[in-house]
Amino acid sequence: MTNTRMFLTMLFGAIFRRRGRASMAVVASMVGAATLFCLAAVCLEVPRQMNQEMRAYGANLVVTPIQQPGQSRQGIDPAVVTHTTEMVTAKASAKHATYRYESVRVNAGSHMMAGIDADQVHQLNHHWNVDGQWPKDGSVMVGRDLADSLGLKPGRRITISYRASDNAEGATGTEGVSGAGRTGGGQSTQEGSTGRSNHVHGSATMSDDAGRPGQLHHAGNPSGQSGSQTQPVVLTARPAQADASSPAGPTMGSAPVDGSIAQDAQEKGMELRVGGIVDTGGSEDQIIYSSMHDIEALTGFKRGSDVIEYSVNTMGPNLTAIARSINDMTSMGVKAQTVTRITSGDTHTIAMLQTLFWLVSIVVLVLTFVGVGTTMASIVSQRRSEIGLRKALGATSGSIGAEFYAESAFYGLLGGLIGTVLGYIFARLLCTSVFQRSLGFNWWLALASVLLSTIISVVASIRPVRRASRIDPALVLREE
Image 1 (cartoon, rainbow, N blue to C red):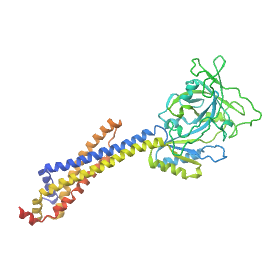
Image 2 (image 1 turned 30 degrees about the vertical axis):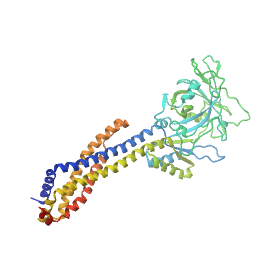
Image 3 (image 1 turned 90 degrees about the horizontal axis):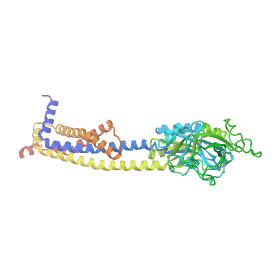
Image 4 (image 1 turned 180 degrees about the horizontal axis):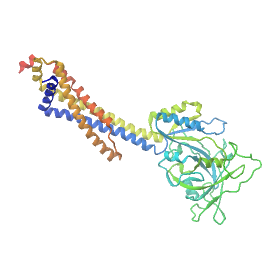
């Protein structure tokens, strides 16, 4: 019989002769592995899924231009948008959308109009409830509150007018729209509001199908009629009033880019179709959304974006580090801020799960260590006479120790395998019943669980094995 075969025969013989003690060691390892795998699977998978779901509720990072005193509003250059996006995506996967904001006039009331790329904004804000179509060339998407006040529905036509003087630096307005308020329904940012804060007055008239003038009730036009009238209403542009003292065109940018703009030096009007109504429950419900082409046609010039919103697939310190890296690049002329309502809630929930995981893990590791160590000490005590006889026959302390270490490793391996399977079952039930989420099997986590269980068993047996290696065969045999 070879030494290896004899070693295995003695190992499995010892295990099966003391099945009661062996089962106690296996159970101790199994409970530890099941608990650790269950907690680890939940605390790793649930936050990851929560982070992905939170990304569907708007941006968690907002980038705005740094406005210098006395400088005309130019927005964020497309090259800067590209460079900033590359900086963000180099650290984590992200989606982004750009917004250009202008104050416009509709039915004697001032409102905010946003030029967007509909595909980008749709990908960034899956929670937006849109009745109809997203904006495209020739049509707009109107916020629910604004649509209700103006009596607008998908398919109606609306005339929007624009004055360059209303959007000039220093113009005052009736209400502000923060950049943070445009991200996922009114979240706040770390450093305050961003983006444009001016709302200016504007005007447009309406007529019914017979051509009779009329008005829609609006906060900026309290004398008007109710916006809930039943007959179809078409909004048409008021004839532009020429002003000889006004400049020949807008004060910023180049010549008009669309022939449908009213050729007026002071006010421009454009008739657009209402393609959809958006309902978010936030400040977006008071904004008109159009394509970038239409807002450039209305204003008569092109410029950069006022806000870049990012939905970054990271959180906490990692997200803050991305914002800090953008802010350190002062030459780009932009500043980045995290959206605290999303990031703080996300981070708080994940921090609670991770704290629970570490606290319970420490307790479970200690209990597993004590359980396996106590069982191995009992096994060594029962085998004192056997150990003394083997040493009297010439067995070395190393060979005896190797047998006990192999025995404890077997207990840990078997308990780890069974415990990992049970832990996955418990974790899946927990995710389904408590968090309402599915849970896949993580093979790397399973391997780590089995290895950790084996290592803990071996480490817990070190002290009993050292005691066994110091047994004096003469004393043991004399007691027998």
